[in-house]
Each structure stands twice: as C-alpha cells, then as structure tokens.
Length: 325
Image (cartoon, rainbow, N blue to C red; front, side):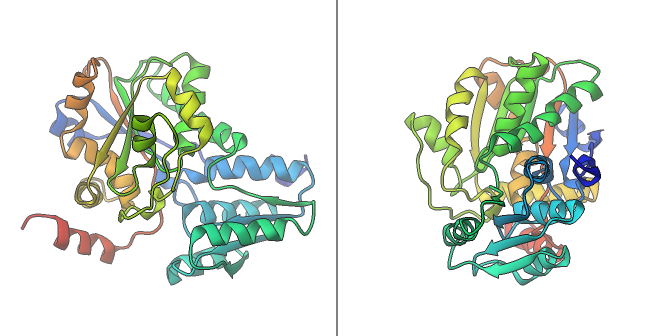
C-alpha cells in the first residue's frame, strides 16, 4: 500500500464526561463523541477502512449510493485517498447535502426515486469495470472492523473499567456489528448494550421479536436510521451478546437533539438524538433493571454517532413542535 493508503482518515474521538446527564440520571454518564469525526459521523470509521482495503487492491473508482452520512464518509475518504468517486443519490436528497457531497470533488448523480433505485444504479456502474468498487453504507465485514475500534477506545479511556451499559442507535446495524466485534476482542462480551431505534424505523427491534429479518417501510424523522432491514450477519451475531432493544417515538429523539444542544452545544440528527434520549427520557436505568442488569455497576456510555443533516433551523423547528412551552 502506498503513502495515501497508509494515511489515517478517521479520528480517535474523545470520551467526555457529561455533567448534565450524570446529574439527571444520578449515574456516571460518558459521551463517546463520534460526531466530531471529520465527515460528521461514525460512518467515517468503517467506510474509510473499506476504502483503504479497496485502494490497496488497486481500485480505480469508488461507487456509492447515499444522500446522507455514508455518502459524506465515502466522499471524504475518496478525497483523502485521491481516488475518483461517484455517488448516486435519490431524488429526495436535500440540496444542502448534495452540495456538501460535491464539495469533496466527487461526482453526484441522481439515482431514481428512492435509495434502492440509487443502489441499483450504483451497482450497474460498478459492473462496467472490475476495478470499480461498490462501497456499501453498512453491510460489509471491513466496515464492521473499522467501527470495532470504538470499543477499544472506550476501554482505554475508562482505564479498563467495564461500563454498566453502552447505548447506541441502530439503523442497518453496521455500528452495532462493529461494537460487538470490538467487545469480543477486548473480552467485554458481557457488557449490556442498549440498541435504540425510533418508531417507524425499528427494523432491528421487529426482527428480534419475529426471530427473522423483517422489512420495514421507514416513516420516522430519523431518516438516517431508515434502513428497511438489518444486516443479516447482525441477526446471527446478536444472539451471543446481551443486547436490549428499545424503541422511542420521534418526539423523544427530537427532544434529545434539542437538549443535547442546550447542554453541550452539539448539533446531531434524530438518529443520534434517540440515543441520548434514553437518558433524557429516563428510560435507560429502568430498562436495564428490567433485564436484570445493574445500572450502577459502572459508567454508562452513550455513543453520540453524529449526523450532518441538521441545522439551527431544524433544531428550532423540533423545539417548537416537540418541546412543551
């Protein structure tokens, strides 16, 4: 691998003690700040890892399908590796997101009415040349491996002290799959994991209950959680861990975004807001106790996954619509 392929793309993120959330919950709460990744979300860890693998194999073009955080992570990685990149986006993509993608020098192509149409067009593009690589948003072992480092960083920053719980949001399951691999590697398979989803995007929750993969038509405001199905491998791996699945309404996710901005001056999407809402809504301690877990056995870690589809105007709208005056 050449110089570019050896370049570090994703950042090691801080684990920050949250005084407001600790006081609110009467427990020690830490925030794993994946929102400070250069592309704005945890997605950069896994996608950059996959891109570097494909770069080492001689890939001449990255191709993706995403109008959101996965697309931004791919665009940033392609720019850092100096590899041509084309990203297909659905017609529903917001102009500001399309502009941000293009700012990294990638080719942004309209890819039909929905994300599946964009994926189909991306795969068609990849079929034109065997040196082109399709970069999946979440369902790839290299992506999971990239995300797995989050668990190692948490262990290092907590100086080996096991958390009472690690909470994170789940869409297609790429980050959760990575965390499972990381916990397995460091010997923390017994740490309870709280998997948060919003109503209308709870494909993982419904799949767990059904004992099979369930296809969900996304309706939540947490659009970046809007995968129709979880990664098949996740459904197999999840059986080996203590995963607690919890679903909250859009209102709670939106309130989580507003309250996090008020308490820590950080703007995140509802897909991330639902994780911090587990504490703001006072769900986390009770749900742990219901499942036989001691919520005071150690610190609570919330993975702030980030998300770039948020503005001051968005938060003001959430506050007006979802917060009591």
